[in-house]
Image 1 (cartoon, rainbow, N blue to C red):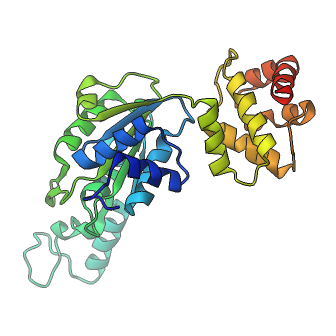
Image 2: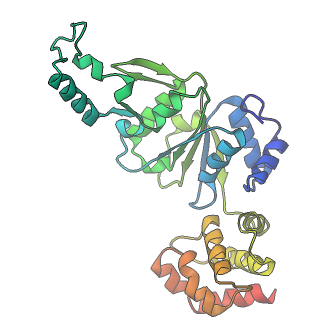
Image 3: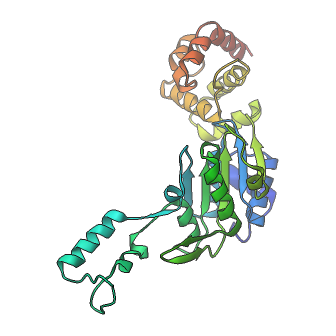
Length: 306
């Protein structure tokens, strides 16, 4: 499967499964169309449901490098695009100066000028420029993770970049991507992303999985888990998500918890072990305090008696 020949939706679904990503047909369709139409895929959903993993698996399936931009509050263009390596530039200037090779106007044939430090050798390429300036000639998979954490100003810049996939570095000129990268943008929806950016993307919402799907996921991700334990863990988490928690556990937490139980050589759930390992499943003390005891006892009885 190549970027130019992405196959069918069914083949995508099979390829994702072969790389341990269990995707329903609607998601496989969105990925297929994103690659075929060269449009960014914008994925929203709760934390831990597998949004980031899409880009990682895409890079594996397409055999392309993965470039990740982790968004955060205060992220600016220089951190995401490029900046000059000022320390190296100053060092080079001092070397030229000590050797008598520094010309103030830069016009001497045997001397160096200030313009000589604004070359690609001194350019620090950040993720977005790396995705555009494709050194090996292959379009990468670009993951722009948790865009909702970034400021709206950065979102506006990103909108411009996604339109042309080119970057202008004043000292070097315009750098244009020979081939648009495969772009996956994720959001936990802590704020709304502007409609103008969404219009440039294919949109897909990833919800918490059904019991059957989550069981298939943990079977693929934790093959060493006993079948009974995996069934009970998935049933426990599915029931727990109906509890009024500050942060409901995602699939990532289900996998972490099951791995922890396997490490403890558990064959099935019991109240003592569940209460001792809730920190692998829940990440807030108030949630742990609420679940430990009566709530966990009720759910354990339910999943072990079925």
